[in-house]
Length: 354
Image (cartoon, rainbow, N blue to C red; front, side):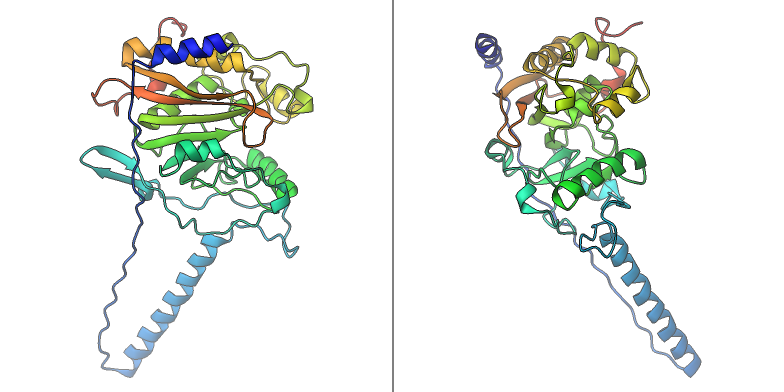
């Protein structure tokens, strides 16, 4: 195993991508009002009436923006979250300059988590070492397992994924007293709101095993990551969940089978696996993580001049401590524009059925 890791690192040392950091951008909302002088009593009353309506409407908007935070005091049921989304305008987080598109993180999330500190996972020193100072995307955030990085969160919401959202948010509330909100509601393999090469990193923990088509998801994460950016992954050990103990590990051929048919949650026996194994469709091990990297590089290095460079690898992650960690540097070797390439529609003849 160590020989394989060393050989992979030596093979990739010829390439030295640079990691790009971008500064935070903050939206400033400026409002201007114009007052006109009234010349009749009726007109004055009408203006006052309109002003009162405006104030009442503004207050209702503020309430709507903050009502997604569950009330843990008992005044409302924490087991029935009603939403999971904070924002609805993807364009509000996209910026553009002479170098291209990039995403803009904001320090003001618009809410405050209220988790029980005794149930929180520890901070990942490695994640902070690799990703501090950058702006990235977190897939499937958890209030019980926060990374506290500068991220835009993408995940489930009641509006688009009611059943799955209810299941995972309720579990989070039960375990640590709160559930994670997301900026954008979308599948992990469909980051439609982000232009290509716009994010410094993509981060997820205990998410990949839930996805019906992990290879397609990886393609999408590479698409949105800049040259020199990082894909930071944590997946659970085979026995991290007692229900997974004894299950055969997923192989790269299994993933290729799902990839060839563009599998979704209704494909194969996924509905049964979802119910039986608490949403775990796959069982990862360290060999599979390395096989995924080798597959991606074989498919995309020669054709699109994009590959993954092994950056860090841990047999036991420094977050929850019950999973493997791997991170890759995304190397987009040519300076040509890749914004028009949609990885999911490119089908390598060695991997896809005709």
